[in-house]
Image (cartoon, rainbow, N blue to C red; front, side, top):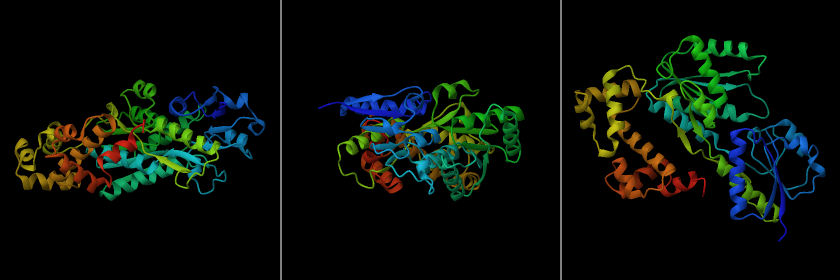
Length: 390
């Protein structure tokens, strides 16, 4: 069978694009008989794709120039951009993108887990090409408000070299309105670095005064900041793999279900670094109790073990937990245990028996029951959904 010509019209100079290409490459090695066209600046090399005689295209249509180049094209195309989530989006091609509400929920869980009681979201102003910014912001705010906390949302100008100082001034003014300590979820790593710079200018300590979490896990840039930036790793490799799988079926003329034409891929999870590496709880006994729970979660600890460790009665400690964290000591133990289980499922190939032992569940059966009741999924389903190789 002749090789199919497939153009990848996306920015491979950024980590997101490179990771998507890695997933596409993995698909072609396993199943595809493709010849890939990919360039550092693909539009400069193929300015008019309508006359391109290839078999398929995978494109990031969040770039208006890319959208213009493919407008009216008849070649099978899969979009990996997030602009398609806007109701006004007119280019109705199949797409594979990130599950932004889940991204926001993971962010909220992580920052609440660190003990913050004040929250903020820092995004950029809306355009047709970035509806995901507000989707993440609204979902994050809803998640923390559902737990009884407040959240301040800020959508400022996109930063250019010419606007850098004025944009930083806007961010600083917003930061000055927030109650400390505060946890800030930024729409992406670039915006998180802008927040970090604003904190530096105001003399705010990270993470003691301000915890900062980004999205994309651009490892080079996250490690270059001081302190290093915590981030959410998106399922980018899987976005690439599934977009290639979808395009392959389209090129073969196969029927593609409505569900498969609009895929949302869940993120891999948190990559914790120094920017959120604190327990932001002023009450010293509650802070010590939270640290004890995290350090001993694999030992099957109970509420009385925690109370004894901080030399308080169970009722006193429970009351302080409910006042500060909006949950009981038992709730915190179960929450930490479940989050640890999720992390092991997503990042290791350990058996359920090994995970149950590591996380303090009495049995595999009890782990599976609690996991399904809490998440609506079996542990196996959760693992497969987050595995880049599935």
